Image 1 (cartoon, rainbow, N blue to C red):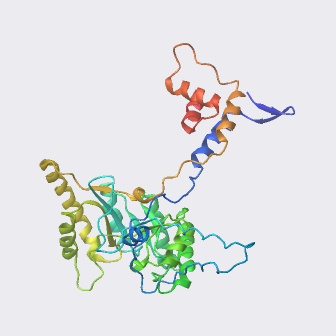
Image 2: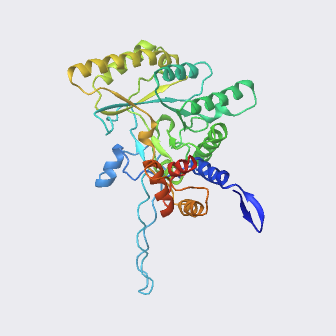
Image 3: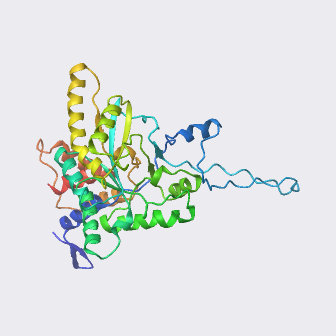
Length: 366
């Protein structure tokens, strides 16, 4: 059967319903900021009124207080509410382990890439074990027309295609609290470069050097970027360090892991790259020992622990789908005793305007 408008054939209904289902599947979810207090040493102090540790170059300014002595007919303006705190997780090697959904969790993250020599080795190791990580990219590596620039953009696309998260680490690894006037260009420029390479704008941000100040925090809130620090840092960038040093440090720390550890490695330094495989092997052995001893194992978590939980937006597509279902005479009623629970449920939801993607697909399968 063909739908007609003023006597003219317009669209076959099955094709139209299929197109609608595809639109629902491809509709991007809306981004939001997690409604939780930042898990930072300074955040707790701010809530209790205690002084927080200030950055050396904290350029944040507070709003001036209303002037006193205003006339009665011009009451002093009410104090502005405090600016929302940035969503942030763990900064610095001395930061305590973060609260988690399990007794022992570990998130893998890699900074400063992509590197044409070492990043593919990291990807190979992670893919072989089915693990996902966060790659905090410096955008300057993706800019340019040289063959190596094009290859790095292809590599970032590969990181994303393999299910890892590409995140923002500024354009040039700038300390944005020492140079606050450059914050917008450094953050926004890198977001654009990443979006151009992967098709997805970054949701997470890591400040180079773990910099923290009010100017940077306000910039992240404005951009709805979640700030992710670290609390495990083998400092693989130090001269003279090797993979054995990195592994020894991490084995010692992870042996005492409680809560969530956020591991900072660099896919630009051989010490971390070549320690990754032995580290994951040690975790597997440790988990076997822990299970045998009745202790909780170390759970390797992906980046989803940092992403905001955002409900699907109300779009009115449910009502549209219900209207389509009412106008589709080719949708036969199921014979008695033959309709599946899935089809029956989908049909009921369609009639009430609450159909979902699964319901539409069930209907299309009839």
